Length: 517
Image (cartoon, rainbow, N blue to C red; front, top):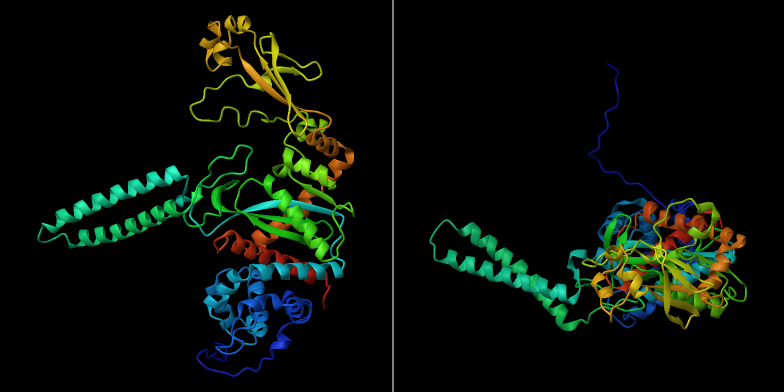
């Protein structure tokens, strides 16, 4: 048998390591190190520290920022895991000069400096512009829904939460009653009593939490045209239930605005609502504010093209874009149906939400009625002429046409039971025939203005760049960097964490294009 040297793993050795030599040029950690040491002004972090005249010395924000951004780059999210890396990983030791911050210090730094993180985000953006990584030609906006540090089971309207509280109270009474009955017995029920005591403690904790929330909070209202109550969450009431392709989550919508040239994120904000249309104006306002502060120019004066998907489309946004003269291309839901290339494609547009309310009888939808916009006439599915009941124009220049079937036609119609929710109303003299209404975009309405833009050859070409600009960014942050859940609670803190991940993306772009060597 060959004679091999036997390794001895149970031995100590001393290895001389130069930390600066571990940070090799051309790597992410090298760019990160030199950006923080030579380029960035970290004075925005200093306001939180009050140990100028006494007290224990604190960890330098430059050290904490390095290890957090490098950990996020490596897909390490937990503060405890980051502390472990500082103890065992040579690259973390090199970046921190062999210091090991406690995980509570790391967690506190992430959650306590959202304004300073915003300032660092702007500074990194200025570095990207200096290195020629921002094109200032096209910006694509989209959102990525990410779970939050809150359980969706703790969500509900105030009425639902009140019913849940009452149900828990009944369970507490039942457990107490059983516990008292066991007190009368002498032996053999000790385990059951211990189990009941634990259950009572858990139920009492949940009851107190819901009860306190209902007494101190106010119902949360949505941001639609007709605001209605949306589900609150007793753990993080600034997050929201959101429907995604993978099911319903409790989380935040991380919205990013991405420059087309090298996919640099120029703005990143988190919103606690699933719908995106109300986020467009805050994002564009922030971009214009940041561009003005960084002397990048102006979205309006430089005619920078802005594009977003149909989730950001509504009449108010179109009116805002038109009024501010922003060079935007945001298609509506019917964008594909107007394109001849998609003429044969099946679509459920107009029927998707038809009669979706539980308990409401399904009837023939308005899409089955033939509307003549020019003559303002309408023909029902049975070929009967309807009369124009109401004609009005809203604040945005849209025309609303309401038609009603003639009483004699609806009364004798063979399809009135599938066309009307209350067919018997047509049999009375004071009754009404079938009523339908249509909203028509006039040539002066903001929607018609946007439709002309996105339906043009140039508009289709611009919108074609949206997916290839913004979607790879979400793939990098979500898949490569492992951000599938925010670890903080509250919109401001979550936005800080979202911007930290977007910082990692931008710094990685600086490293990949060799801007800093």
